[in-house]
Length: 227
Ligand code: FES
Image (cartoon, rainbow, N blue to C red; front, side):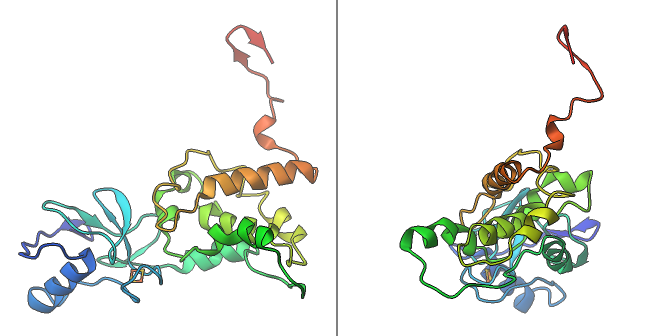
C-alpha cells in the first residue's frame, strides 16, 4: 500500500473478503493509524474509491489478491493515506451548473426516463476523475463526472433551464476531452462519460456553438496536403 511518498506492506491471512474488510482488519488488529474512507459498504455511497494496481476500484466490492498495490485515487489532494480531498468534485459541478435548475411538473414516459437512467446512477465516487489524463495538462478541466451530469439534466424533459449548462461546458469542458475513453471502464455503475461528452458535442453543434477541434486556421502540412 502506498502511504504518502512511501509504501507499506501488510501480511494479512484472510481469504475471499473485500478490500474494505481487509483494511478494517489491518486497522483494528495491526495498524490503527491506517486511514481510509468508507460509508455504505455496499457500492452505493461512492466514498471508498481507491486505485488497485493502477486501476480504480471500490474497496467494498473489490476482492484483493496477493501483491496488490493500493493507492489513493488521482487528481485529488491526498489528505492522509487513502483519503483524498473531494471538494474539487463540487467545484467542477458548480463550474458546469451540473444540477437541476428548475423542473417542470408532469409525467415522464418510460422511454424519456430510460434516456437518463444510467447517468442518474452515478454514485459520485470520483473514479472517472482519477482515470482522466486531461488533468495533467489542464487542472481546470470540468471532467467526466460533471459533464455526464450535465448530459443527464440537458436530456431530462423536465429540466427547464439547460441553456446555461450548455454554455458552461464550452470552456474547459467538452472540447478539452481527448475522447481517450479511460473514464469508461473504471465506472462501477457502467456509465460511459466519454459517450455523454460526445452527445454534448453533437448537441452543441446543433445549437450553433463552434467546434474548436475543427479549427485549422493556423495551417499545417499533412502528408503533402496543404491546409
Ligand atoms: Fe459505499 Fe464502498 S463504502 S461505495
